Image 1 (cartoon, one colour):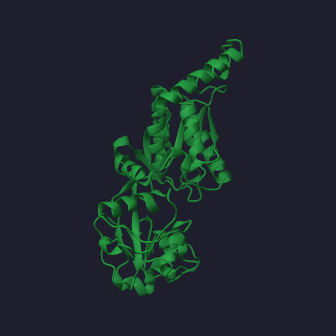
Image 2 (spheres, rainbow, N blue to C red; image 1 turned 45 degrees about the horizontal axis):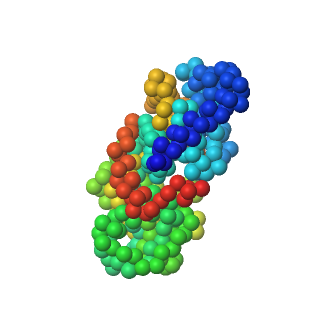
Image 3 (cartoon, rainbow, N blue to C red; image 1 turned 45 degrees about the vertical axis):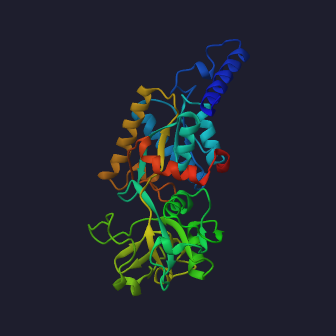
Amino acid sequence: MNRRALWACLVVIALVVAACGDGGDTTTTAAAELGSDERPIQVLFVPSVDAQVIVSGGDVMKAALEEATGLSFKVSVPTSYGATIEEMCAAPEDTMGFIPGIGYILANNLCGVDVAFKAVRFGFDVYWSQFLVPRDSDIQSIADLEGLTWAFPDTLSGSGYVAPLAVLQSEGVTPGENVESGGHPNAALAVYSGEADFATTFFSPPLLPGDDQWVLGDAPDVPDELLDSCAPDADDSGIYCGELRVLDARASARTDAPDIVQAVRILDITPAIPNDTLSFGPDFPAELRTQIEEALVAFAGECETNEDCAWNDSIGNQDFYGWTSITPATDAEYDDLRLGVETAGIELEDLD
């Protein structure tokens, strides 16, 4: 029996046991109408930031959804990424979850969890991984990384490990020693300090002044003529090179290395990786799902005309997940990342 069928059997058994334990009482939670006070829709968030921030911002979203749909919702933050997926598979009719790409792939493989939206951040609904090397090194291509010491955040990071591993393997490159640094800034600092020859971290395009916007095909790194000006700004909110703001992982290492942009350059970036998802349990009712999707689009859309929109007090808050908006997503968009997950051998238990 495959894992998806096993989950289905377990859910059926659980419902039968619950009904028998209540003497067949039709007023049990399982028999209550989904979206009622007795059986609220479960909104699950992975614990990637402070749980109190998630709960507080989640309650703002809950209020907006309840006002727009007339349904009841319950916000929760399971103890791990893996626990979030397990809860969605155990309650396939009742759950919606804000889960990252790797988690979505594992949940889809396990029980058919279905993606609806992906995050938009600063105009991009995808992100990239970057290969970082010393700025004064002779490394000019991915092929030059053969046998060199590789620093990465951890083996469960999509941008820090999974996507770049797929690139390295496609190029036939086998790194030497691996350094699991424990975070994106730490991986960048490993190159800065000489602990590693190259690192892989998340890449976010630089924020350009005015109405200009970085587009795929532009150089990912700071122009040479601006390098000397790169430094943390007065209130230490980021690294600026003139009016250009650096948003990739190097900026997160600015406290320990204010001159990291001058010392560490971007060698290359990976193909685009779809952003985090909003996904639904595999048996979530289609009519309710449509109501919720329309409400979420309207909730996010308020920010187009109002900077003080409630969305920015919820999932749009930079201390929460920092989603500036949402856009529809399909399962096929995650195929490249799915291949990376298979290549890295990531399993559900690895997320606990």
